Length: 329
Ligand SMILES: [Mn+2]
Image (cartoon, rainbow, N blue to C red; front, side, top):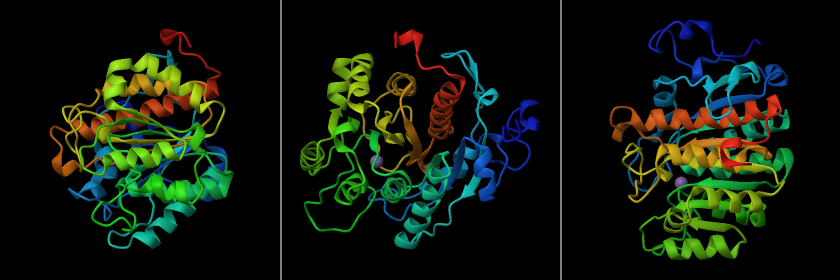
C-alpha cells in the first residue's frame, strides 16, 4: 500500500514535518488517480459567505488539526489496510473570483469522479457544492444528495429574490441546473433563523427533496431518522455534503453562520455510519470550518473526525463490510 498516511506521524503527534491531510502523500499527477480510492483537495475560497468570512483558512486548519483515527472502533477496521488516497493539494481558486474558481472546482471533481475515485473536498464556503455537483453531473450524471446543515441552502433572498448565487444557494442552483436526483435526496438539521428560511424549505420540498429539520430530528431520534433516510436514498449515487454548522456551536463555534439547537459530534458520526453503510456514496465535502472563530481547534478537530468517518465507510466498502451491527443494519 503506497498511498497511505506516512510513517513519520505514527511515531508521534502531528506537529512535525509539512502537513498534508491525514499525512497522506501529496500528489497531483492524474496517472495516480488510477491507483487510489480517494483524493482529498482543499478549496480555500470564502468570497460567497453572507456573514463571517474566514473559511478560506479551513483546509489548512484541518490539515494541521490534531487527530488520526486510523482504526475504527465501530467497525473494527484499520482504514488504510483497505484504501489508498492522496492529498491533492488545493484546487486553484481565488477569493474575489467566484466563476473561474468554480470552473476549476467542477473540472477537478469531473476528473476525479471520471477516474472512478471518490473526491473529498474541504472548504471553503458552501457555494462550492454547486460547481461540485456540476462536475458530478458531467462525469457520472445526476446524483442524490445527503446534506447535513443548519440551513437548507436553497436560498431565497427576500431583499433580492433574483440575487446571484452565494453560500446559501448551492442546492437551489444545482436543482435549477438539473444536477440532483431530488426524489432520493435528503437535507437534515435545518434550523436557520433568518426570515427567508420558510421559503427555502418550500423550494426544497417543492423540488422533491426531503427536509428533516433539527426540531424533527431531535424528536424522532437519530436511528429513526437514519432508517427513513436509507429508504429515500435507495440505490442512488449519493453526494454527501456536510456543513460543519450542522453541529451545535458548542461543538463547532468556528463557522460563519452558527445556529444554536444543533447536534453533537457523536450524533453526526453515528448518523453518517447509519445512513451510509452499504450505500452507493460517490463523493463528500466538509465545508464552512472557519478557524478565526474557533476555540481550542475544536471545530477543525470535529471536521477532521467527520472526514475520517467518511473514509471509514469507504474502507468498509472495500473490505466488504455492508452492515453496522451496533445499529442492526
Ligand atoms: Mn451550508
